[in-house]
Length: 418
Image (cartoon, rainbow, N blue to C red):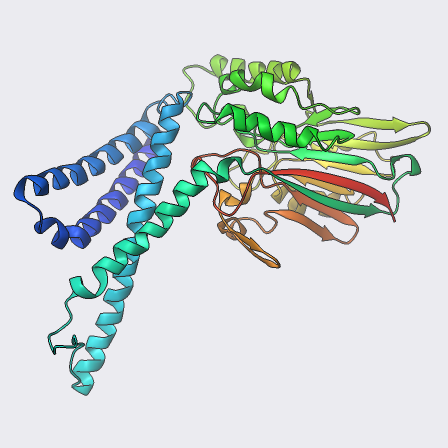
């Protein structure tokens, strides 16, 4: 485990040094024009950022995640992400121009053509041609990231979907289901805005609410300051929840196994304080007279490195004769890997997990996000045959404390017969 962390730190340090070396080469002509004292200050600042970044990454992986319960450390990581994303874009523009010039030079050497010139006949230098546009290009991710932090994080959207089920009992025709997912409680949030999102959901007056996992980032103590906000999430037919991959405390080093076990016991207790019915590989029934539908909830079950604690066989047992089955499962990869192949009587699966990568474009029928390169189903409603999957874009943030083109989501479903 330690060796893998050291390797990550080593590779990250090499990437940081590569980016900063190339960025300094990009800004060097501008720095050289400064007064010698100003030049020294700028160089010291650039070197300090490099050393601070390498030190921060080392501390993050080799120590205790920067005591991640302290909100300022989350902001440090977010700021570093913005800085290096901005630098990378600028460097990328230069590298593209280097490739273009290299190809052009080969063509010129073959054809004997003259090099590019300014209007006065002088050769165009690399500094004149590309450095300023490259730095200008870097301002784009900087601007969008700042907007994503200040506005995008709390730009809550209510999304409404109607799903028709031919086997839906008459008593439940028109039932309204609310979904919230991936809260990721952390001290970096603006609590007034967080409360505003809860108020938005409650104003929709759903009959029942599903929370599909990831209450916290790293440890249960992060949820303490938010209990009095999220315990306002209430519905006449109850609030049902499941665990996500972040809820088990697997992403930090614990001094003992007992301390990790206590963290999860605290997590279970937090759900009681919230008033949520946490489904741990089990089910509940919603009943109306002789009619009923089943709500199944499992622990996290994900592909690849994500934990597979879920036992759908246990949650499903006893629901065989129920006409409609609704499944809460945090990770959408579960749908294709187990639910559809083995449980064709599950009508709808509700998931989260992807956050839509907290970044993307959704305009009309155009949908793109880096999330789609990891997940076939990464946001919104999917259908295969008579089975549905809904992937919620998430309420909170992880890693980067912002959202760009992928606003946080609260979903309202109406189930109809037909």
